[in-house]
Length: 185
Image 1 (cartoon, rainbow, N blue to C red):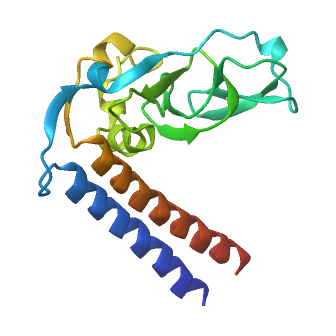
Image 2 (image 1 turned 135 degrees about the horizontal axis):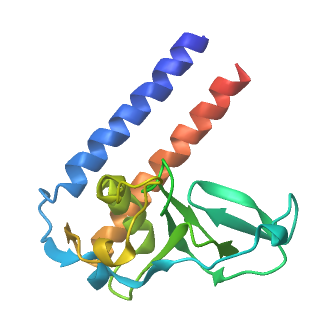
C-alpha cells in the first residue's frame, strides 16, 4: 500500500510538472503577450532587515527568510497575499505563497501582482522560470532584484491567469492530501 501511495504521489507531481510546462510555454489558444516582470507587479522588492534578537520560536507573525519561516516576531512588514522568492542562499529562487500579516527579511523578495495580473499565477510563473539560475555566484548565491525585474516572460490576460492558478492550486491541494496519506501509511 505504501509503494502504491508513493507511486500515486510521484505520478501527481509528474503530471503537475507536465501541466505547468505545457500551460506556461504559452502554446495555448489564448493570446499571450510578452512582458517584463516589472510590468506584471505592483511590488517586487527585497524584504527588510531584522535583528536575530527579534526572532523567536513563537510570536504573532511569521518571519520569512530565503528558505521559509525563520521564526516569529511581534511586528509585521507585509499584509496580504504575496509570493515570496528566496533571495539568498543555496536555495535562492524558491517560491511560496503567503497570506496575512508576515515579516519578510532581507533574504526574501516580496512579489505581488498589479491590477492586471494575478499574484497566485505569478507563484507558478516564477517557479517555472527557475529564478535560481540568475543568481550571482559568490561566496553565497544571491538574486539581484533589479536584474530579475528585466526578465521577460509571456502571460495571458488576468481572467486566464486566475483559471490557471485555480487549476494548479487544486492540483497542489490534491498532492498535499496524498502526501499526508502517505505519511500516515
